[in-house]
Length: 219
Image (cartoon, rainbow, N blue to C red):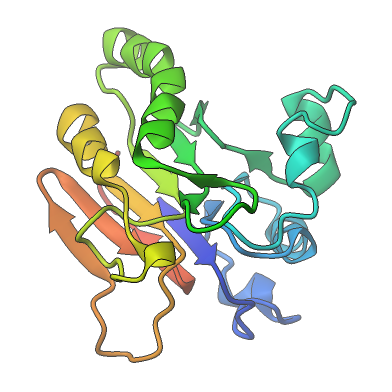
C-alpha cells in the first residue's frame, strides 16, 4: 500500500496540476494537520482516494464544526462530503483492511484551540480504547497507523514549550504497537534532519510537507 502523508506546508510538488501523474499509484491520503481544508480538498478531489486527517494548532477555521461545537450536528458522512476527507480526531477507523486512529493537537502553550496537557491527551486516548480492544479481539491487532499532529516526547520534537512531544504517545506505542506513527508539527528545514525513527515496534514518521509511505508488506 502506498500512502501520501502531508502536514504543515503547502508543497508545490503536491499542489500542482500534475498531482494525478506524480501520485497516480497512491492508495490513501493522511494529513497530520496545520493545513488549510481547501488544500486537503484539492488533494482528495484530484486523487479520488480515501483520506483521513487530524487538526493541528493552526488553520482551525473549521475545527469547531468538526468537533460539534458549532451548534449543528453532522455525521461522519456529512463531514466527509464537506471536505472530501474524514476527521480522525480521537477516533478509530477501519478502511481498506487498515486500522487507523487519530489524535490531533499539540502540547498546551497558550489558550488557543486544540492544545492539550499530558493528562488531557491521556483522556483523548481513553475514548479510543474500546475500539482498539474490539480490533484486537476481532481483527487480531489494535491498529496499524496512529496519525497525530504532535510528535512523541523525545522523538523528532523540540525543547520549546509549543513543540514538546507527548510522553503518553510513547506509552501508546508500547501498549498498542502500531506499525507506524505519522505526525506533523515539527518543520524540517535541512534535508539531513532525521525524518523516521524506530521506537519498539513502531516506525515514527515526520510527514512535514509530504512523505510517501510505501509498504510492500500487508499491514
